[in-house]
Amino acid sequence: ICTFQTMALFFEKSLETWPETALKESLALEKKGADIVVYFLCGSYVSDEIHVAHITKCPLPDTLDAEVSKVENYLFIQNYDDLSKLLDVEWIVDYATKVIRMLPGGVTIVGITAICSKKVFTDQKLVLVSSLKKTQTRAAALSTLDLASFPSRMVLIHIDLTTKKMQTVIMDVVNRGPDTPSQVKYAQLKWISLVTRVAVDIRQAIDVISQDDFYKEFTAAIKPWATSLHSSDTVYVFDDEFKDDAESLVKDPKKMKNSNSVEVYMYMASASSAEPKEVAKIGEVFEVTFDLAVRATVPIKSTIAEAKRAINQHIVRQLMARASLHYESMEVQEEGRRASPALHQFPRAATTVIPSGGSLLVYDFLFEGDTAEDAIKNFNALLSLKCQSVEEIDELWERNLNEGEKEEPSLIIQHAHKLPEPDNSLSFCLCLFAIIAVIIAIVVVAVIST
Image (cartoon, rainbow, N blue to C red; front, side, top):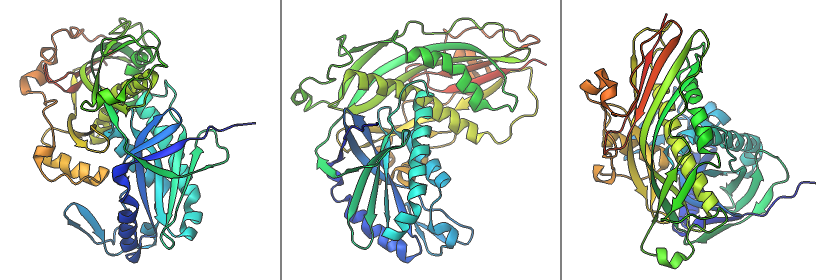
């Protein structure tokens, strides 16, 4: 017999007016043909509670004959056809993934709100539940590489367009069982920023993926290190104290009234992997060097164990988000492999703050040539923010490589390993990632022997 722990659902108090505002928007869109509007609930899990800090709308599908005009960063769609009236699973999950990339570790999509008629909700419930399950799967992979547990309880809210009533359930999307009815409560929530820095050299030999799939190869290259990160050998010091996992992150919340952050120091058993072992006839050596400023985020009520998980999620998510964006931007995969280095520069971070519950730092990632204006567009489109000025965007965390550094990657970080000479069996890939004190960039250099 399965028993399910009851979970309380709290929305940040500033979201009290959100249902009314969202209803008005959905009613207007329904008149133009949109039968259902979906919103992502962004928040955190703490003990037996789910805290929602921010809500963002899933963009509506554009069809070939839809007339789309842009006014003040909002999309107004005049003509829908039948295909655009209902959202499908892949559409919802793809946009959920884009949102998760932008969130700090410790914060994820915890649920979905659907605003529609009762009939449409009944017809589309399977789509919504499937979307929740796939979103949880994507979030776990993006945040942990499936090396650590990830919350499986998610929220599904229906707001009826006709009655304006809200019905809420919490479901386990992994171990399916009966849905648990719940109720939204509003509270003055607070989140704490976990401030740390992690500097790592990873040198890892992998077998080449036959499809030349850079993302899969990068994942394989960092997975042994990520496994070590999630092990009990990693030591964390919170505000100069060693604390047990069960202890509260903040023992006296009143003392944090004027502070939104906790300093954390991390110590790993080994900052770099062992020298590459013998690999298959065709293989690659990835070298990943990064010096990363971490700003994970958790509710103030979190335990030390929850804070550790958030930090680990942040590190892995930052790497994988940039790797996936870079891979998506690669226009053509080369046929065959080269015997000379191929340089791949990952996008740099730009941030802004969601004021809900304190300091919730969210991320966009900019390629060469992108500016703060591009970050504004992305924050507004994907997170439903209302950024208007470049002054609201911090893009000084990182910078792109200059031409000299591109030609000589070893100049970027002096302690990086010397590039080995290519031989008949091994390729070489160098990834560099450092904070602004040195330089921030992720670079991939691949040397392929034929």
